[in-house]
Image (cartoon, rainbow, N blue to C red; front, top):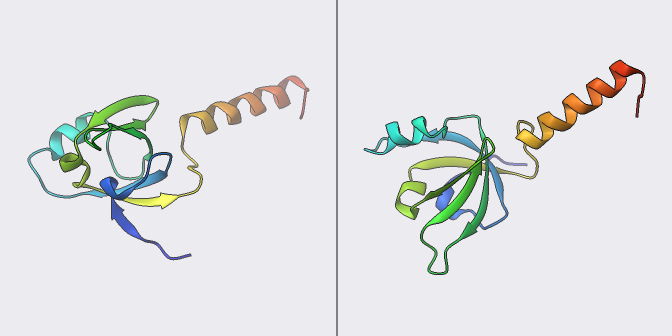
Length: 104
């Protein structure tokens, strides 16, 4: 499998990706403050009817950003994110069950 780096605006609704980097722009600081940092899993939830803005889910929060802002975010499409919030929640539940003696 090759690693294809693309921008967030190229993803389709329902796709998951891992952020690989941010291009230099005036919005870079604002995106970092919202939690858009390299290594984080991002899920493109949906697009508006005229394709602008788009809704993304990152670290359990929903954000709406413009396509022009999405062009500044470099991502790599993945099938499954290892650091998604739901994944961590399930791992903690399994750990607690094993600890109590109720192994799956």
